[in-house]
Length: 281
Image (cartoon, rainbow, N blue to C red; front, top):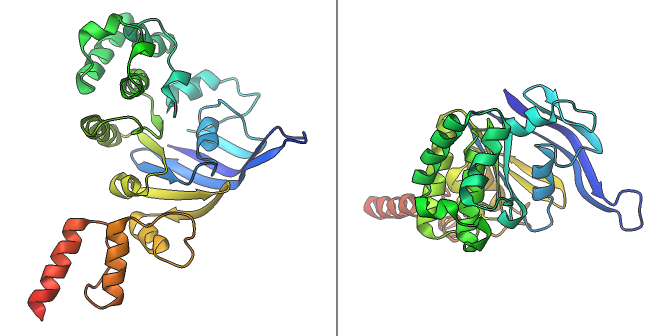
C-alpha cells in the first residue's frame, strides 16, 4: 500500500491580494517500509506538503490517496486517514495539549479504538524507548524543555502505531543520545513495514537514513531519487539550492584530481579509498 500524490498544487490566501503559492504540481509516492526524506530550504513547501498527507489541509488542485482513500474536503473517512498517517509537528507546542504526559500519550490510542489496557501497554513500551521517567508521566508536558517536549510529541504518535509517520524536523532540539534513540525508532518502524516521511533541511542526515530523497525548491520537486543519484545532483551544476556536505565536497575534489574513483558522503569510505589509492602507487 502507499500514499499517492498527483499534481498537488496549493496556495495560502487563495483569491486574495495576499495569495502565496506554496506547492506547484507536486507528484510522488510514499511506500510502506521505506524512509523517504523531503529536503529543502525554509519556505520550500515541506511542512505544507506534510499537512496535506493526513488531512490537516486539503488539495486545491491535484489528488492525494492513502491506501486507496482520497483526501479531500468531502472525505468521510478522515479519521481513518489520521489513524493511518501520524504527523509529528515541527513545533511540539502546536501538538501537545493534555494536562499530563500520560494523558497526552493515551489520548490518540483511546480515541482510535484501543482498550485502556492496550493503550497502557503501548505507552509503557514507548516511554522505555525514549527514556521518559515514570515520575514525569504526571507532569504537565508543556513545562519540559524543548527537546523533551519533542520526545513527548513523537511518543504520542508512536503510541497508536500508525501505518505512516511524518516527522517534521524531528531532531531539532534533541541532544545526540536522543537523536540516536529516534533514529533507532525510525529504523525499527521501517522494519515493521511503516512508511516514514522525514521532513528536514539536514541533507547529511537525509543521506544517512533514507531509501529515497525528494528535494523541494520554491514548492517544486527539483530532484527525486535514491541516495547515490542525490550525491551526483548535489555536486552537479544543477544544484544551486542545497549546501554540499563537507565530506562529499572533498570527495568530489579528490575525484576530479584522480585521487579516488567515486564520490562519497561517508568519511570512513573516503579514508579507505585514499589509503587504497596510495598503496597502489
